[in-house]
Length: 313
Image (cartoon, rainbow, N blue to C red):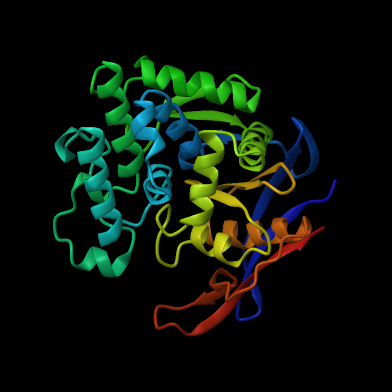
């Protein structure tokens, strides 16, 4: 088995090395892998499946009329830009909820120019506010407690059961940065779940396939300006849906191939992860046509001082 690492060079000399694991699943089977099948938390890479669970608890007439933008922000780790905040605010009004009822907590927008103009961030600026708007709406319409955070909440139990089914493994559970449960599984389980998303996209299956296509069509609404998710979708040589997760996780659905890819940067470094994702996609015949900034190491004045590159060995 080959190994994959991302090396960061400064002034032509190696500064850091980031080990990478990755795998591809088709038809429920691992057909390609590199590195160990490491287990880690999904973090935000599970959002399309959490959104699917929320949709199952909403009125069908509401689900039928949701736009691609609304579905994309429901699966998003958005940057808290003005249009993201406005979309989530409108979504709350539509699903029946208020900003004060969101349980995600507030943090500064991930988009730095926006953050400079927001002295006091709100729950709406949280990168997870779209997911939480759907969880809140689903809980209200299903008659569940509006405190949807606990592991034993019916919505969270449904999320766990769905992920167990999709990934083909029993997940461990802990608490995510936004206060709801996050789930622990091997990389192969993540790729298996994302292969199911790719199959749903290929078949046009509701609602999971619809979520995947919304993420593909509206990548800015599920990420933001200068974000990796948006860049990958915009530059890829074939249709795909993608989602980053904290601490170096990245998952990809390839509907034309009915395949799922999962990538893990062991160090959790986001820049190295980006370079690894490009290399893994290229290994599978998917090229990125565009300026890929993550391969450059810049100093605070924007001067090029090094580079990052993937190394197979």
